[in-house]
Length: 105
Image 1 (cartoon, rainbow, N blue to C red):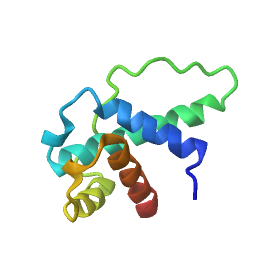
Image 2: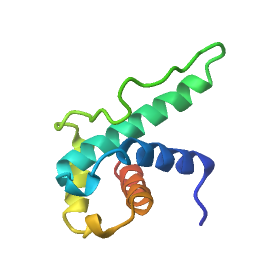
Image 3: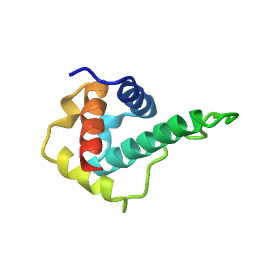
Image 4: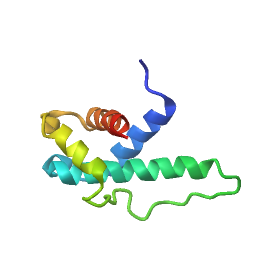
């Protein structure tokens, strides 16, 4: 099944938020916190884009992580712990984590 335009946009947003960093050196928790943060910002931008007259400016920090206590972080860490995620290409990893994130929500 092909990914929707929204899913492609979310994957692109997550990739863009991680690509400036040596993400393979992150811990699973650090990676999960940044992925969820990028996903949340992308989702918020999608919602704001539907509001007439709303202007979405640039984010001050594209990769701001969510709190480590966010339950989605623990769920993604559990998934990451079962995979050799550092061996994946970043777009592949981001698509995998987006699908996992959508499954746990």
